[in-house]
Image 1 (cartoon, rainbow, N blue to C red):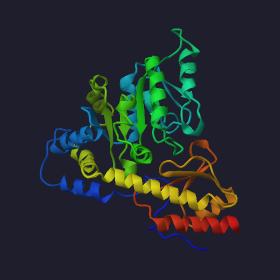
Image 2 (cartoon, helix red, strand yellow):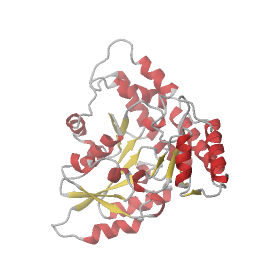
Image 3 (cartoon, rainbow, N blue to C red):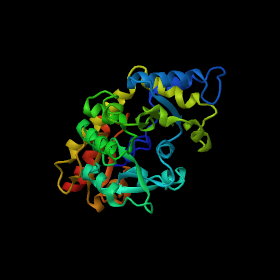
Image 4 (cartoon, rainbow, N blue to C red):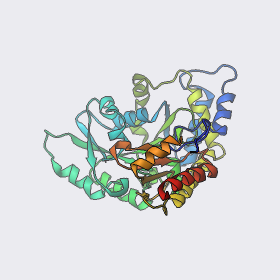
Length: 350
């Protein structure tokens, strides 16, 4: 039985991957000399301006440590404690953040919406808003969209516009959980502005960690008024880094020559390669369209156990679903994909 070596790449999470060369180079460059603390440094200024250039608008930018804080603090900035947040029933803000959105928003309730393939059904927004309009019910105030979704699918521009239009009709602010926003951009072949503020997104939590950074996400407010006093939220929430340059400098390396798009394009391509290799296999069923860097598949449980015994690491029952989740990263190689698929084929064909 073949066993994976300790230094091989796996498919459990794109968080498993290391720091990409571009981000690491900027991080090391920022480690020379002294710099002003708490975000008043040249690296944070440069990274913020690069993001304004990427999105082609004068947005407000904040850097925080992780996606939970980015989502939770940004949603808290849109709501009062008596409001509610609408999101998909599979959304990360519901199932994978330990109640942090409610905690940081002082009790704002998260309400769940249905929809196929991890995408919110626009009609469900109206249903949720009109379910009750009395003072005894938490008033809907924000719509949270995940792009790419928790199951690796990607909202089209038309789908996003429809959702944002419905949200505006009901006076809801639109927040986007963009932990894999880069993967969605390259999947659709659109510009960042087309996928964000032009379709009605008020604030984007732009993920960098899953695309090659060591740590750190960017909270990008396209509606600058909503960013008022967000710096205080960051400080109170433990998200104001004293040596902020080490959060922001890697963004410079990722953004200045388009590395963020190259890495996302590569991880998406590896997911497509993996899908093509395992879809024809007997007893294996790909569960969702593969739009980004994730492949969800139903694999017989004994085979899952045997793959784990061979040293492959990947998650099954993520979020309570029965599927196995296979994530590709910026450093996944064709050889990784082909080797995984060969082992899987050997086990399911027998």
